Amino acid sequence: MKFSDFISKGAIRAALNSSDKESVIGELVDSLQAAGEISAADREDIVKAILKREELGSTGIGRGIAVPHTKHPSVKKLVGTVGVSAEGVEFESLDGENVQLFFLLISPPDRPSDHLRALENISRQLRDETFCRFLKQSKSTEDILQLLDEADNNQFGAS
Image (tube, rainbow, N blue to C red; front, top):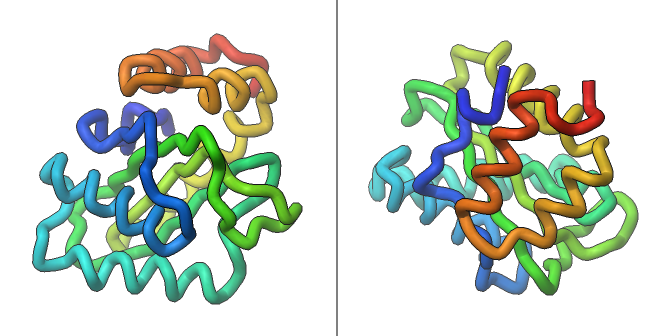
């Protein structure tokens, strides 16, 4: 699975404004709504589902990265977005560091394999220090799209 299979280009945020966990999640869900990936009627429920998942354990996996995610019946296919916070956000990360890179995923409950494959792809790509460093330095949606495309085409060291 590639980023292009699930990342909504219109939902990418190169400069997140939020300064706390809940508002970052809300901002990323709003970006998916603005891109037409989710409906306004489902926004609150999706944010609550992601926050409920966070209660099980933070998806802040360390090294300035978080992958908030949930399954929700309102989506018909896996959708996701990427957000970058220059300052970083307190996200209860495993290493205690603030998070700069966010990959938010929402998948249909009846497609668990898609959800897992997307998480595996994100995890594999995020092991590459160069990819992460460039993403954190991204200043525009175009920069992020180019990096995701390069990752999809195996132009980084991740395998």
